[in-house]
Image (cartoon, rainbow, N blue to C red; front, side, top):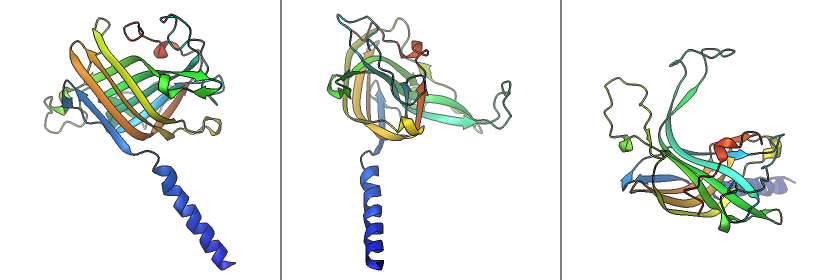
Length: 230
């Protein structure tokens, strides 16, 4: 009996790193050839009303392509941030002991994933919008004693010229939404685009340190941009 217990424990311990090794901890971003160091990868998905599964939308391109493409919508974020509990007065109903997240630099990939026969078609996933916050790779002036770095500049302006859009998702695993998991899963991808002549490139191989879900009514932040859907 003792031998069986030892073997069972060994098998369980062996299984844990095998699952964890599905994804690494890499989130790389370059902006116009300069590395912009990132700290974590997170995601936000457009979910159903009960937040227990992804919402199947009628068209991931929001009418911008020649035909409708049913599927899921997901934001994938690689970012560097500071957390400050007392930098702003609390909102109504909040105590002073709350965390505010400030994004210094990062990339937000708006992804549309076709769904065929109930399964995600990752090979046909499309980059339908992007957000890029640049603080000159951290080289902006930093005052002595400064605790919170200023937020960078959003490069994806309403009139930015977008070219050379590419996305390749090798693997995607969502956390268990039925159980309400807010972290876990992960993604392996490479994406790129050129904004106003500046090449943007990102490579992510990471678990999701934070996983958010949005209800179906919150579709606007997930909308496709015509500059990406051609």
